Length: 136
Image 1 (cartoon, rainbow, N blue to C red):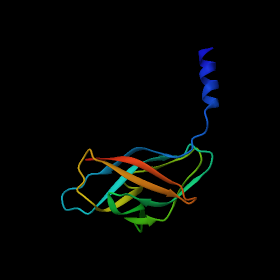
Image 2: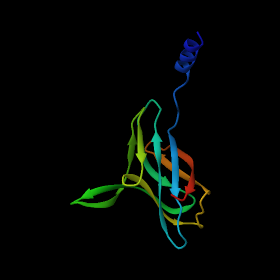
Image 3: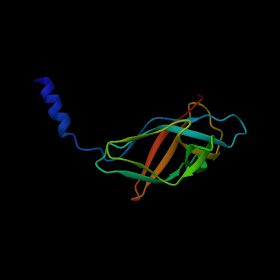
Image 4: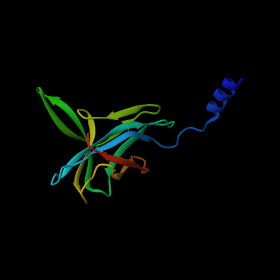
């Protein structure tokens, strides 16, 4: 009976209204470095696809989305203008694949710091995530 009640309550939960950015982290920088990368898993449990078209952070002068691709046998990074996460789907941002390039930090990044990362959808909504700086 308790199991049926739990299943029924779960079915009654309203759908998610915004995507989540799980397992998110930003690579810490050695002194003097002007660029780092950010990673995590974007999950969209909303009822519609979400296309992200803008990326920013008050902690960096520039944030962009990149993808590592193999061109003529050589790994190269290329800028990606938008990223669509299907309804009910997810996209992993990881070394060697999609990742954020975070350029010109406003102040030094120390492991343990929490950085705000903002993602703007094509429909104008902006989602803000808190991301930890980690030494990995």
